[in-house]
Image (cartoon, rainbow, N blue to C red; front, side, top):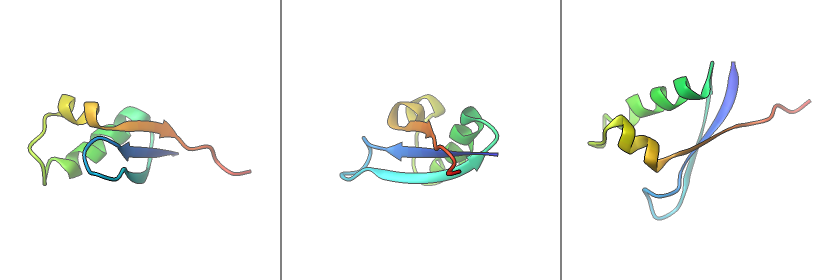
Length: 60
């Protein structure tokens, strides 16, 4: 499993950052979207325009 950081810079007044462990960045985006769509009426494409995703390096 890889660790990813997902940031919502354009949706709220202050950026929201969430950390998720997933097999790939695409799977992480979709899992986060499933939680997001319960509260907000956005398409998956609209959701992707809101977020930024990056892989977090593991500490060694």
